[in-house]
Image (cartoon, rainbow, N blue to C red):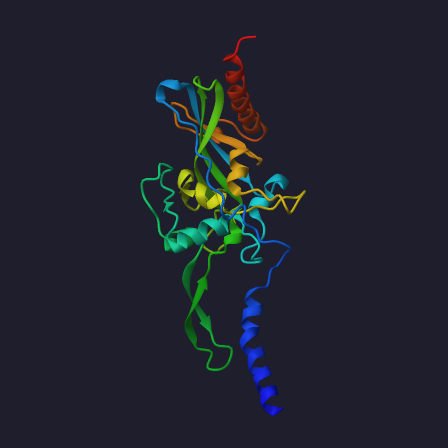
Length: 281
């Protein structure tokens, strides 16, 4: 009898890890998004591009429509990740290349250490005084870490063009750059609320990663879209802050306040009108 009890306990201890590994948090295994393939762009010849315009825009994560790009907070759930976690984890493991912020032409790769330093991670040495006699002074090291939750916006570089072969106005995203607020030497946000890019991601390289990462759907948990779907279908809110021009200047260089927003809308309407002008009715 004792031998049977001991054998039963041994079998239970050996099989317990197997049952633990088969725990399913849900009612089915998700196979759609993790195995999805990237839909290739239609072939485009230079001779078919009748008109094109390069645009830079900003996706503000404080806007309601863009909240699925910001949440969940870093490492708060295993079900899904926010956009900055997807980028940073891929950069850290070496499956995605990050480029510096000196230019947006993807010429100079950057490292994780440089990214964190640009985001505010650094080590400071401060002079402090002991609270007890003889009250002597000593140096202490204070380490400031970079938090991914500091990302407040994304900069988008894209090309709009009219393809006469397909008779459509199309857009292709070239790059994405997460942005944080500029801070002073004490880590406080500057009063001007200036946003600075952390690094640039070449979007065609990141498409496979984004296509296999699902994003929250407010209406239906069974029909979550991928991040690539969101960008390709333009399911985000943004404003234009620069268009290609002879002076290479931004809108804020010649328009301020409400006039800058009106200028952004003017550029957007100009692209729409260009598409309409290509047709005859």
